[in-house]
Length: 313
Length: 284
Image (tube, rainbow over all chains, first blue to last red; front, side, top):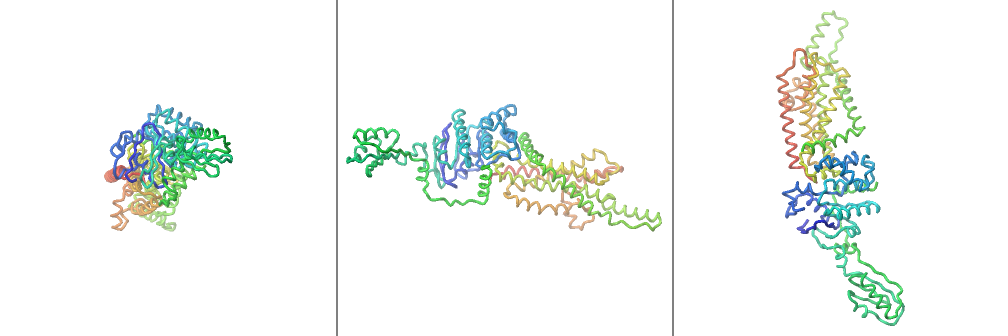
């Protein structure tokens, strides 16, 4: 990491995006006290990561990228171990565990060895473990990597619920732009150890120049370019054989005005389309299209292979 | 802290109790060791002399002579008993050697990170590894003792149940020290091949430079010097003294020496393990 600086608001989901090797996991490791920063400082919920590491550990939950649940134990035993490591009193732990497992749809599997779990179940158990001690801040490192669509959507709903109902602040890294778009209140894009963009998903998308409206009209001898360009929030109009390509700030609000203007001129509309920029485009705009030849270590490759093998089950 | 250690030790124990294959291997391995070493190395059989055509009083004298020699070398007339007592310490060594292995697995599977982000002391994790290895070692030596007994181990004529307690305290101290040593060695190791290499480097030298299978007195001087620093010599000696407890009583002077050495050994290496864990146990 190269001298980055950012702050996450209480109760928000903060997304951290960037290519492989950009420093996402390193940042999480530093904020969860797994690594010591070589320079600079950071605080989590007001505690300094270097001097008050044990305080941070007790209020922070980590859902790691790897599947770290113990295969040889049952779901329940894994949760109980986690509860004891976080000093959750045994009197309340059992109930808490059943609640969390129930919410994540693992209630019935609690007594089974994790060996028999599918990838999605393991990942959910991982999330459940991160929640056992009612953390104030939850770190989610690629929470849905390799999961099928159903499991992913379930995870999203649950993560949103954590923010809305339990007011947990969340710090999330992901490679899936639609995931960041669906979950995050704010997003930071990092590359080469630096933050290159930080805003709400909506503002980031707007920063590309706005939405594109394409409207194809019946043959006519009028040129509407100037009329359309004079409409509020329209930034640019291009006419090519009666197909207008209009760049606007808020597409869904500008579109009715545009249609009204065209109909006033008694011209028939053949086709309309509205394209909002996706976060994918934003991401590529900021980080470029060149693929990264990140130096992967032998260890890392092996870890990834193992992860994919397990999560696909 | 105690609950942290307990929770993590429970995990370790559950991991091997739930694995029937591991349990089976733990039983089969000592049987093989005893069978191969105890019976194949039947040193006492070497001095069998055919006495059938000698007068009875000569036979008696020869037998006495042989027994006297054996007694002065091994402390018993039965090598199998001598070796079995040493084998209890050797099996402790072999179990302890691999205690570091599970740290490497925990590191690879990410479980170590989970422990490191939890608000617990690093030493709790290390102590749990050490204790689970101690439990395993004691369980295995218990097994090997029962098997040896079934195979013909001869207890001393003054043997009483309390001697068992003495023998196993010696084994407990030995396994505490050895497990801590090998756990400490594995704190920064990242591949299990390296752990294997370290274990293989130590296992046979430690076994043969001790009095586990052969008495120190019969070794060349330089080897004696090494053997006197080997904790396995002391635990083998202590266990043997308890098992061969004769009516003449226990040799408390020698036992005191044994236990002093073992206590120092266990204390130094357990402390070292804890200190190294607090300093060196980290992600990576």
